[in-house]
Length: 109
Length: 114
Image (cartoon, rainbow over all chains, first blue to last red; front, side, top):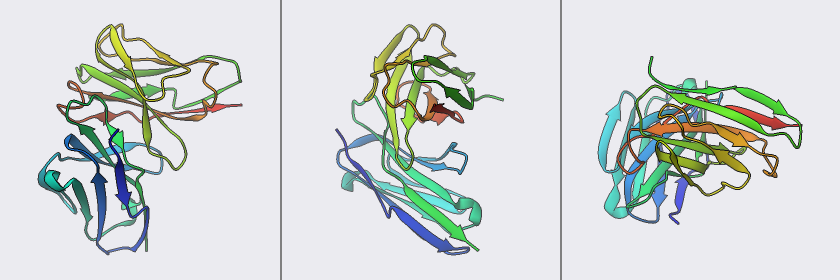
């Protein structure tokens, strides 16, 4: 099956700093989503981005499908950005969303 | 408000007991899914259903059962055959299959086996 690797596994930032999270996948994909899992466990949809670039406030994402990676940019980080960020993909003809292992982000004052 | 409702949020059960987790959606989505998450891990697919009265096994279906009698409901039963049932369970839905759009998740149910 498809492999989804995220880096870095852990990240600690000072409030106000910028960061880039990376998601590499081993096969072509029809669907790619980024989620933020808050401390209570809820998965919050950030982006549905099988290709191209999208922005939503301080967050933006870029997927380069031909090179099999996606990037999530967080600018001017806040303590409420803390949590785990997951990338998840569906391969062409696939029927399930496969999750990466996540990036644990902690934003400190 | 439209969304996905899971209940209960927390559940304790004794070994050897079956337990059923509820998942209801009012988004008019055709497809529904159950995922399991263990501490420090990503999510793994248990079962999914793309249409009423039909469902398919995911990667870790052993010890679980589901039904899809109504479009809006997809309950998951954790049976006594599941060897390590303590986990966080998440239900999701999408308009059609995962190839054609976004998945949205409920708030999850935390099951602890004593």
